[in-house]
Image (tube, rainbow, N blue to C red; front, side, top):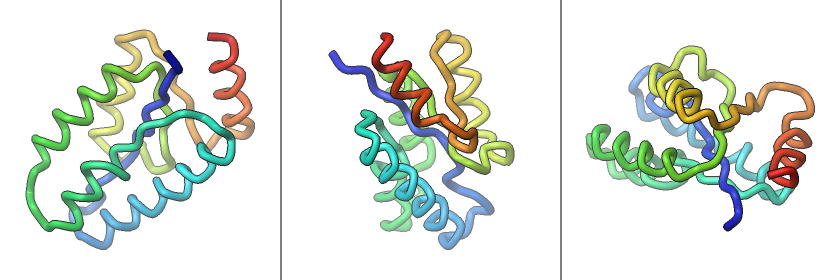
Length: 122
């Protein structure tokens, strides 16, 4: 089975729909880089979170539980910019550390090469 990297990062922001959509846009930009580098990933921003934001429904517990289930199935974590202000992302980083899976910070230079090397080694 091929390894999957979970993309973690802010979703709610200040709670406004604009902030949430901005965070989805950032996730899309990074997802494009994952695709360009042929790195398998899962992004909650582009799955259930995007659908919930667009619907205007308040389903944060459902979203959190579903994304936590996906994180448990992923082999590494990649962290989007702005994570320092996201309690959810901090919790995802802690969960990754408890599982002893690698955490890659997408703001670091050379991180896509580092992830590709990790995928080839493991």
